[in-house]
Image 1 (cartoon, rainbow, N blue to C red):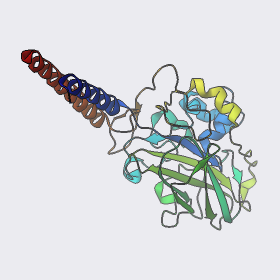
Image 2 (cartoon, rainbow, N blue to C red; image 1 turned 180 degrees about the vertical axis):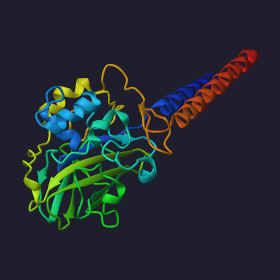
Image 3 (tube, one colour; image 1 turned 45 degrees about the horizontal axis):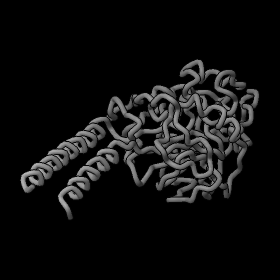
Image 4 (cartoon, rainbow, N blue to C red; image 1 turned 60 degrees about the vertical axis):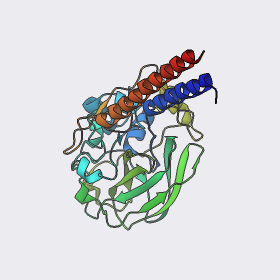
Length: 311
């Protein structure tokens, strides 16, 4: 290969590797059926939600959490869900932005369900390979108390699906709902296999037949429409970093980059940036790529000097 062509190839490779190392990895989504707590409140309207529970969530955490409805995540979870998310913070995944979702209330809008086969639909705005696992709360669950890991029947997931195919903006997969009565909670974990990133969602459901205690029934839940999702996309701080939307039209990034998230969980890093990894990993990757680029540049000029000496 001629000297100039060799030098050009080295430079192109260095630039390409630098760009590759700097590309963040993210996927995004939330349970659509039964609709997650955060998606339900977004469907009501972040600025003026209708239900008392969603209004309380906004009062506690602000409206941005609802515009970021598809971003309840931990960037470097790698299966360490119980280690990183403390009891009482399951619905927010320990993220301070979404703390309003952890409010202990018995009036969250709920989806009516019954025991037996159920088709889950996970609303995805950036599809990736991974495994979905859905857990149900145990009999005797009290919706007026913050959900804890001990409230979930972790030994018997109601649904598990690996690498389902996204269609029309949804991953769909089958499961079986257990015999329950009254209000319960379904907790979904989407652990990516191409990244340590994981997503979490709480779906309030009502199996009927509960005692009720004379309280007024909670309003029925409903998922946001595509029109609502599109209308609020410009207010979201969740970046998709060029990943496809699998039929959804919410893959555009906001004009300003998303801020780093803080996860308040024991054993978790203080800051988890939108790269889908801890800051140390991110900076190391970028730093390594930069060093490679500098080394390649030095090689380029060395080749040029040798070529000039031969003339």
